[in-house]
Image (cartoon, rainbow, N blue to C red):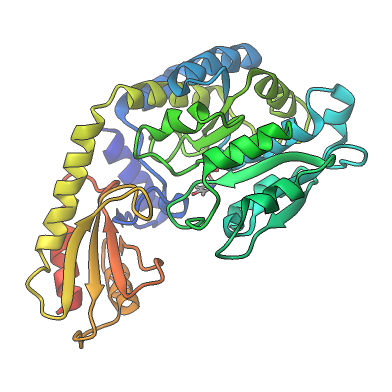
Length: 375
Ligand SMILES: *Cc1c(COP(=O)(O)O)cnc(C)c1O
């Protein structure tokens, strides 16, 4: 029913539906919400409530699910990053809260490893801080972190993502060094689910504030996220967040998103994660099997805790390959109807197809179209 309505709407606007073999990428829609989540949003939309009270109660669920002291719902992980910095820089002092992004007289430096710099760190910079880089693109030493932390340091920022930072200092070591100097560690863990253990892992390591996207692996509303961690910092983050008139006010989270996120998060922690992994592996295998006999290509299913957090069919183009390039294959898949989005951004001679967001029956379509695009 919902799907049919959505299709009608997109058709009316003249917007194409696509097949997502790329993963929980925001630009192509992130993830799809289960019917229970849509129902919770629908219900929440039909009554007025006090948003502070709602987000406090929601925060108790977030805390329980993440193992953190406290939590709250925010408008996506990027907004969680703004709130992390705001809380660490200005705390809960109302005068300072109102002054941001002017951080004059406040601790206003965020230490970050160079290999963690990425387009999303704009969100960390937004509250008016200076990013203090340590290390080089591919090397960083513990003493560099020790020396970078001084009386102006508000926090040490850390990104966990499959596509960068493999050379970074390990998170437990960063926590140890930062805490020895009395400085909090803030983590962007936006797209780290799966594996499901990551939901509690960084909090368990002692990270002070961690943010996740609500609209990626958790499959909640696209414009939702969670922020969890130390109680004093989450209390401060609330002061900076909508509905308060502060730096977080443009990142409003509505009652519908809060209801959807809380429902999605509870469903997520109760899922059979091993069964999910098996299903995604099977779907990726269907795609890999479809092209495994083509000479010059190597097709495999891969999943690891480094580059590929969810199972992917990886098609490697060997030196014996004489056909189209990975980019040409991706273009062919995009040119037909429905367009199929795949990954070619790994910086290697490969096309990867992420099965995480494939819907019923799509793996077979992808396998067939991929084969046609290659041969
Ligand atoms: C997606 C993403 C974000 C932003 O998360 P939103 O929930 O879309 O705001 C931040 N950092 C990384 C590494 C991401 O992949």
